[in-house]
Structure formats: structure tokens, C-alpha cells
Length: 211
Image (cartoon, rainbow, N blue to C red; front, side, top):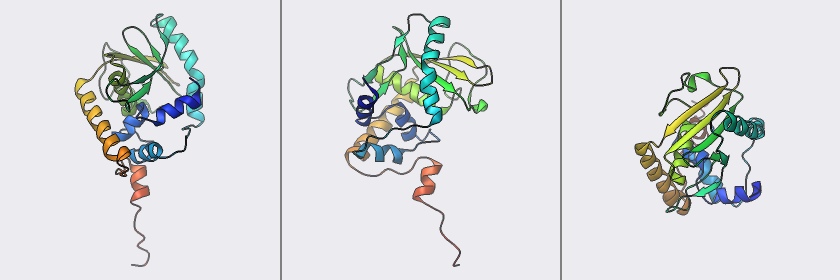
């Protein structure tokens, strides 16, 4: 599947970064932006220099993971939830037992990343948006385990974060995404903003210069 085909398929449903925006856990993207993208006919590319750098580095991360963690890893796939076809996700890589997500973090906020690597991680050890993305992919694929393999520039760079499916979080996530799709995208009803940037755009501060 080429990138244009992937962008078209992604537009027909909710992907991993969309999920974190809808949940209000993405600082850079909100539910209103997701809504506007899904109802428009425009195929828009979300891109900047840091996102491009992450894509360029993904083959390197894949090789490092294969050499250092699990040599059974294979290329990822585009997935659609078996019951809700608007819940979608593209995994970076897969094994027979878990999904793998690669992150090249060139401008890290170190406090968002846990220092110690243990057997299992939960909410709060990586940025909220990435945690949501990982759980979304497990929900869509049916997998119960996942690895996030990250290069975090300048500070103990190579890290492996193992996860298990967070059943409570996934139930809450699925309910919120179904509600968003049916009540907003299908109904063409604009949602409330879910982050500070969107809130400022929708509800700007009043001009008090005449008072």
C-alpha cells in the first residue's frame, strides 16, 4: 500500500493519533481537528520536519529491535477492528505475540519518559498520547501485548517499554471512540474542543478595550 492509499483508508476511520486527540490526551491535536478531517473531502498529509525524521529513522529502529530484542519481528500492517470498521490502525511491526511501535524522539521532554525499564508498564510512563496509541492498536488488532521501542535523543537513548492490554482503559477508549464517530462524524455535529489550542480558537478571549 502506498502512502496515498494509506491516507485514504485512514480517513475512513479513527487511527492511533486520532484516538489520543479524541480522548483529550494529545497536546498537538484535538477532537475538533479530527472531526474536521474526517468530514472533509480533502486528503490532508499531517507532516513536519520532525515527523519526516521519524519516518526516515524507522528502518533503523526496526533493524536495532530485530538485532537486540526479537529477531522474529516483521513489518507492520494496516488493521481494521473486526466489529467496528471505523476503528483502524497501522502497526509499525508485529511478532506472533505482540505488536511493536517505534518512536524516534528528537526533541524529548524527559519528564514524560520513565527512566527505569521494568517487566510491565502502565499509564504515565510514556507520554499520554503514545500510551493511548499503543492501547488503541491492541484493541484494533486483538493483541494483548505490545512493545514501544524508542530512541530518545541525548539521554539514555535506546529504551524498550513493554505493555499489556489495559482492559479498563481500552473499554473506556472504545466507548469514547464509538460515541465520537456516531454522534459527531456520522451525525455531522461538531464536537467540543479537547485541548487548550482548540479551546483558544473556538472561545477566544473577549476584547475588553472598549470597557
